[in-house]
Amino acid sequence: MFDKAERLSLTHMWVAFAAFAVAAILGFYQVLALSGIAPQVQSQAIYFGAISTHGTLMGYVLTTFFIMGFGYYIATTSLQRPLWNKPLAWLGFWVALAGTVIAAVPLVLGQASVLYTFYPPHQAHSAYYIGATLLVVGSWAWAVIMLTMMVQWKRGNPGQPVPLAMFAMSVNAALWLWTSVGVGAEMLFQLIPWSLGWTDTIDVGLARTLFSWTLHAIVYFWLIPAYIVLYAFLPRAAGGRLFSDELGRVAFIMLLVFSLPVGFHHLFMDPEHSAGFKLFHTISTFGVMVPTLITGFTIMASMEIAGRLRGGRGLFGWILSLDRSNPVVLASVFAFLFLILGGFGGFINSSYAMNAMVHNTAWVTAHFHLIFGGTTVILYMAGAYYMWPKLTGRPLHSNRMVLTQLWLWFIGMVVTTTPWHIVGLMAQPRRISSIVYEIPQAAQWYPYQVVMVFGGLILMISALLFVYNLLRSHYTFGVEADRELHYAQPLHPVLRVPRVLNGLTLWNWILVFYMIAAFGYPIAQFFILNTYDSPPWGI
Image (cartoon, rainbow, N blue to C red):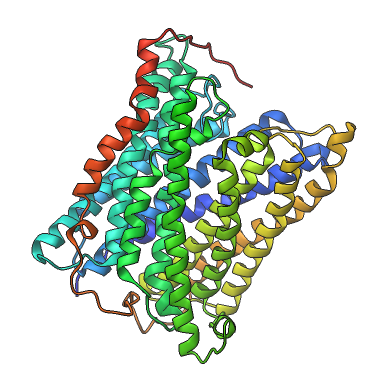
């Protein structure tokens, strides 16, 4: 028996899920305020403070702490060895937590209403930028530990394939180190000096370019742990086997290589970059859809194996025979539905002409929430439900309550994002704190906004029920009989894999050249050409 770092993992996850509960309440406030049905809660200052806090908690705190806790447990259980350098892991946790607390102060005081994407020349209090930077710095300790453990394991097991879950987690660590360079440079060389008064103005074009380095790849940093749930937990939970271990490795490597140089599709309407570089990033964006298609094929094939083993017959009969009373299976089915719809929206966003029509509309936020909440968060929930009895030593207190919570999340997401997409197509702008419904065009949005209030309410109830389920299970009576974390086995045992599918060295060198090609001149031009800075402004 060895130390699996359960306490370390649980501590990270409780921080993540506490932040999630607060963020869900703020999310409901936003749809309520924007609907206009409760004028007494409308306030521009509170609205933008709430949306900035909601985005920071969801995009940085929930995800980063969950991924760190999830990663530590995956590393120890899949490699069957204790965590390397646990003191460093705790140091990273405390640095990240201190950063979260420091950033929270100006958010609560209304001095950081810049949304989680910062958007200079909007300016926040320096404590917000410093706190967010510390959160990222703390997570680098996690990334170093993940990569070190993979290297040590390979040295101790020459020629053996790294377990797929750990290989994917190492890919995510490398991805995070790569993608956090952009926002780190923006913070250290632009936002923090500017907010401290060391400079009077800021080059907005350079700031947006640096953040685009991070902006889209961070989505895959969030998504890869969700994919690990699909590859490593789901096939076994469904009673089958993973269709192909090798296809999983290919998908994770493609996510690493293709997801980084794609950020300019967020800058299609910005003037600072040429059409050629926008086309370069457009092609790269289409490329990142390939690993998602590979994942869709592999997981669907794995589910068909499970369904047929359970007696499913015919072309689609295996679907009906899947065990939907298992939380991992049910959540994965929901996640797949949202991934298909969200993937369709991604095609639109990455196409220049169609992007131009929806760029600054509510469509974009609806698409983002479909991928983040509908696919990523629900698989975090599935992973937590599967691991909780192993981590705490206590069984889930009620499978029925767990399934109810997942159904509520699915329904809430449908009820919220469907009208959100529609009002986006009806040209409702995003980043607005109120709507003047006396204007005829805006009046058409009102019924959809009211529906979204019900969706937001269902989502908030589901989020709070999720935290309640974990809390109740953590302190329930009873003992979990099986404390081992079991991973799905591939249909065909993997004895050896090519070196390029068992390490990251080659892919990191490819990324060096790929990133220079994608971002080299677009960043250098701000130091070569005459550009113009902007003074700060805000609410």
